[in-house]
Length: 356
Image (cartoon, rainbow, N blue to C red; front, side, top):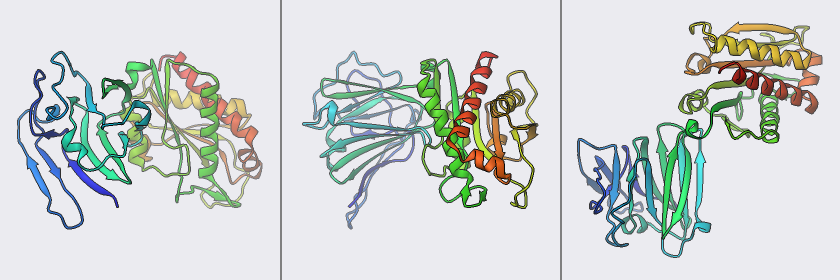
């Protein structure tokens, strides 16, 4: 049975005392609760400086080295008997959450092991005991890469913004997913075609490794992230480019001769050289060019949530019309999906070369 042992609901956590040699501040509230009829214990402390740093008692494990500095790092004591090989760290970029999983840990862990450090980007931190595992979940306010270091029984975690690692950052969004199939024509779902093209694009990036480009995906399976999560990933990663992959259909959903590739952009954004309109034009030219499809140009798209709310240059690519028999056959073929992905890849690389 799952137990929520500690729920930290503000920015960081504090338990008991201040570690010697490190300047730390208290979090406003720490909630410790246990289910099955046990009373909830609440320990709270208010401080004007809350939100910067959390601290816990180090006396059970020995004093921390006075030279330790935490400009953007947390330090977690490993449970007894747990080694680096036993620890699982999962970075879920879409929700900006990081799970640290220790095997064989019960609810007493959080009271007996120190967690200390500093980060201005932590919104929430929780500890759960589930199926003989201890799970520390950290929720961040932006996308970060995690750099873990194991030393002397401690796990040190540094948080690095994507642009601290990469020169360029792109977010790829496969439209629809899950219970939202998008257009459905002749038992073919748009969500599956969108995802297939995105996965082909992912493969192309993997086949052409470039350590200067960071690529993030809103989904790589049949899930359905919210609109907020999709555009939020681009915004919170400070992406240079945001690409959303879709496919078109007639309003009636009936088969027709209408065909071709179009790209939507935010017509209400100021027209600048490296803005949404320029990106859209690059995308429609590159994708239609490689596919040999009709170039239908760029289309106003401010009414689309992820376009309107994108803080970075965005292009929503309508690769083809599912309500056109020829294009539907093409869009459901591996070779055509690969070509579409190559066109999107070419557009991204061209955009970067042109200053995005």
